[in-house]
Image (cartoon, rainbow over all chains, first blue to last red; front, side, top):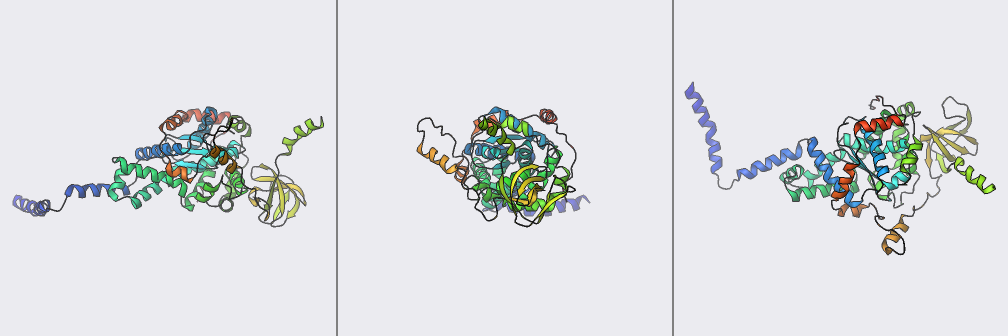
Length: 279
Length: 157
């Protein structure tokens, strides 16, 4: 019995021993590469997601700083945090910011950071409209739309081990490339399907928070009324399906739900008061 | 006196936006499906949109005034050109010519593709962002002040 086990052990160990003696084979590099592949293709855990998000958020703030008005920033954080509490990821470190930019846009960053521009805020008429837009962005975070796109991009543009190193933040150069890629993604946009999903589920989150469910459609209607060639909406229109198409899709898929919660508050007065200085 | 009167009246009139209905639509006397029908609006009928209430928008049409389903409306008028540039181009010009006189020109170019491509991290702004964050409980209190109450709503299939 014992002899049989010994023989078996020798049999297994022998080929491995032989491998280590091959002169051209760098076993450490092989192991590193294998780790990189595992790292780059498996799910990114929440702490890594938050760390990637902070790096991307810092870059976006390098492109446009926050509006210098504490009142509006605190207001948008209250609205956003309340809505995020109605989502499936209520305990992320949620952050909301109004960016100093005349263009109309909003961005969701992995890990729970959301930006809207002053230009978009200026076009809104109520807290329900703000809630509609923030809810759309919250869905992008909850469903990890950008995170998945960043991961996919890392695998497509970096070697497997570099992608792993970048996602794990062990190599500064690879990490820099990854974050630059993650920031440029806001110029390219997500898959259309992700945007339509964010519209549908965003309407639900706003309704859960007690807001008039027509807030997001109302903003889309405002956007639809703008000239697509207007430089203020050029980037937003390039990265999203046309607002008319988004309205059609909501009408087809969501009309009964929208009508069930249409009577909830729009909260116009507070919105006007809290955003006055920023608008 | 007359001017003052007009100034007071103006906000009540609201802001009329040219729009069209994208399908044949009933013009209702009230914002409700069971309200009486004022007129039948044909597809592509031109209207003036006045105000929104839930899923309804009050409009002025050739056939009269009333309410239509908000999602049946598209802004911009039928075939007419939409409004042009919102003046961003002018803002850019100010930025380019620099601070002439008292013009403050910081940050006016805002956020475009070039900015996103060349952005460098701004840790000071990130720190500010962190400081503005709201606690979950504080946000719940804020919602209650706005008479908002949470309730479960299921995602659509």
